Structures are given as structure tokens and as C-alpha cells.
Image (cartoon, rainbow, N blue to C red):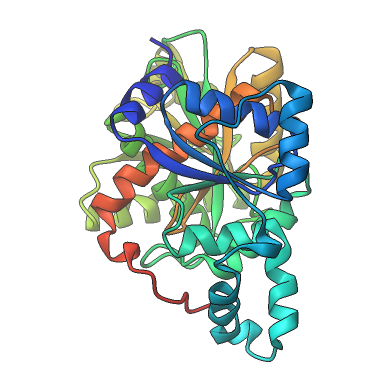
Length: 351
């Protein structure tokens, strides 16, 4: 069974509400209909109701069991506006200015997810990354003890010998261009935690470099090794049950025959299921190459560090990718409620 099919199977037992800010985008409309068809939960489309109904008629898509909310006329607009004006960043806004912010579906969706009116959020299909990330970062609380937000991609390969039955987590591939040692360490811990949440598998986190275990003395390789050591300390302190190692070359991380030569005794080398890249250049390049040259099914970017499950997708995302990402954030929502029950409270985020 493919990874995404296991996600569907689990979510069908606990369906969730997922909000899509880009309700007038045809791919999103089709994805919402498929989400309903697969019995994964209740999709909520944001946008002008007449435009969505017209699009559904043109695309021959049933709107049965699909929610539609127009932010400009929503019954929650006055409440969200008051909440927005309580935040430090928006305290000087007048009522009309606050409403104008919330007419933007990305801001309205961020308010919905923060205040428990949706379980997950999937966007980014028709806009630049910053257009969705900005309201999420400003309006949604981070997880406890997390000081920044990053992201990861879930790569599902035909070759099941890699990672967890072909599943690998790549991070960070979209948010932080040049992570510091503490940031890189936290990215590794958060990405490992996500793999454990979705699969129940023990994370084996490899911090990647052009060097393996000191084979090349260079500051950039030493930075990766330091991040791996810090991540290991953090994971052990929190009793997360992760194996973490680095610095490792990519082939050393995933090929057992090389691991025995280049990193003997490592519990991660040759068996890694989470790959942490030293910077955004290498992470983003790797995702594109593996997707297009190896034919991997890709899901993400899944955002790491937020207290609510969110995904910021590529503008080239297919219907299948959108459905998959929505199912993943829905499954995350189940685990988030177990791990962070205090985040279910509908209080104002201290941003």
C-alpha cells in the first residue's frame, strides 16, 4: 500500500475539516470534491459564493458536502475583526482596516485555523509563498518552545527500500534560506516528529553535508555536525525516541553498503528516513530532482512549528497533490489534539 493510501485509511476513521483559501481555483475545487468522495472529511472553500458556484457548474463538480464561506460577508467577520485588533501587530488598525485584511481569504483562513473553526489548512496553489505564509506566521501560534517556522516535503518513492517503505522526509525546502545551528537542529527534530506522527515509525534523521563524519574539514560541514549533536541532545531530553546522526553525505545516509564503509556503527547511516539539508538551495534542488527524475510523489510543503496543521503548496500542485496534502494535515490534526490539547483553546495568539 502506498504511503498516501495509508493516510487516507487512517483519516477515514477520524474525518477532519480542512479549509482551502483558494476556493475559486479549479484544481482546489476538484480536490475538495475528491476529499469528500474519499470520505476524508469536510472541505471548506473560501471565496465569492457566486463565483464558486459558477465554477462548479462549469467544471461539472458537485458542491454536496462542501462548505463555502465568503470572507467579505461571513458571519464571523466582526468577531475575527475584533480578535485581529487585539493583536500587537494590528492594534492600531481601525475597524474598516481590520475588515479589509480579513477579506483576504488567506488571512480569514488563518483566523479560522487558529480559532478552531477548521482542523487543517491547505493553500498556496495560486499565489506566491509569502502571500500565505505571512498571515499564518502572524496569526497562528507556534508550538511550545518553537521560536521559528520551517517546512518539509514528504517524498514517496516507488523503490520501497529507501526510508520508511519508500517514504522520505526532506527539510527545510521552502522557508529558511540559511539556517543557523540551532535552527537546523530544530528543523531536524520537528521533521522527525512529523514522520513519527504520520507513520508510527522511529525517525532516523540524517543531517546532510558533502562530508561524512569528518572526512572533510570545512566550516560548513562542522556546522552540520554541530546541528546534529544539538538535535540529538534536544530529542533525548524530550524522550522522543529518535536516532540522529551527521554530518553524512546523501549516499551514506540512504545506502547500507556505503554506510558500513563511511559511517560504521551509525544507527542512521544507510537507513535514514528523514533528510535534513544544510540550506534552502540544496533542499529545494533535491526535491525538484527527486520529483522529476525519480518520479517521486511529493506532498508539501508541510509547515513545521505551527500549533495548527498547515500546508503551503507549489503553484504547480496537481489535484492529487492537493488532496494528499489535505489528508496529511487532517491526520496531523488528530495527533496534534493528543500531543497539544491546550492548543485547542480559542484564545488570541500572542504575536
